[in-house]
Every structure is written in structure tokens, then in C-alpha cells.
Image (cartoon, rainbow, N blue to C red; front, side):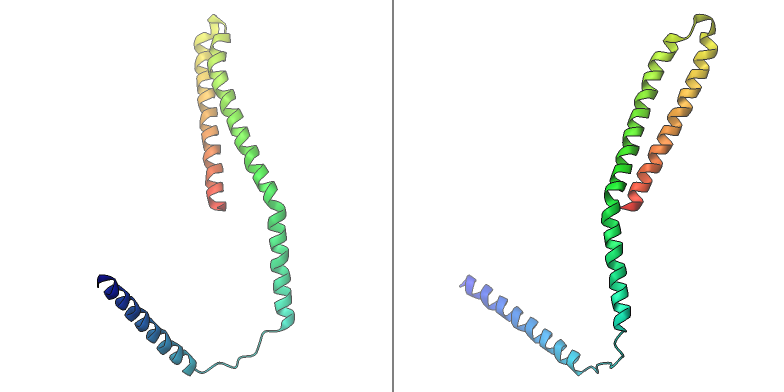
Amino acid sequence: MGMMWQRSSSSEAEDRETLVVAAWMKELASLPVGEGPLPDPTYLWWKAELLRRWDAQQKATRPIEVGERVQIGVGLVAAAGLLVWLWRILPAMTPPSMASITGTTLTMGLAFTAVLLVGTAALMVRDLVRRN
């Protein structure tokens, strides 16, 4: 008995939906149709041609854009690796007599380079987000 009740309520909902759609279709059919002039076929052809060319251009430049992104990513990773390597190696290579001056200068230089590297990475990520 429970199944029959569900079936009847389902068909009642479908009947109500059908009546609403039929009423809307009658209302739509009663609206006047505007007899505006059709667009110029030449204009439509030029627009379609422009869209086709734009699509072809997008497809052709997609590998270049991907390559640029990969190149920037590899460059940033390599620069970060070089920065870490220099941070570890350079203080050990300075002569003891210049250790305080060179150590401070190296630390400031490497810190400045790290800030530039992080800024470049942030700009790259921002551009990637804007493109997508």
C-alpha cells in the first residue's frame, strides 16, 4: 500500500509539472513575434571566420604558454637550489680575516636574493591564477 501511495504522489507531481509547462507554452505562443531584419550574412560569415581564426591561434599558442610556465618554474627551482647551496658553501670559503665583513655582506646579499626569488615566484603564481 505504501508503494502505491508513492507512485500516485509521483504521478500527481508529474501531472502538475505538465500543466505548468503547458500553461507556460501557451503563454509563450501568445506573445507576438518580432519581425526584425535578419543580420547581414556577410557579417555573420566574417564573425564566424574571426572566431575560427582566434580559436586556431589559441590552439597554436597553448604549447608555447605551457613551455613558458615550465621554464619559469624550472628557473625558480634552480635559483632556489643555488641560493641554498651558496648559503651553505660561501661562509666556509671566506678567509678568517674577512669573516665578519664578508659574512655580513654575504648574509645580506643572500637574504636580498631570497626576497627577489620569493617575489618573482609570487608574481608568477599571480599571473597563472589570472590566466586560469
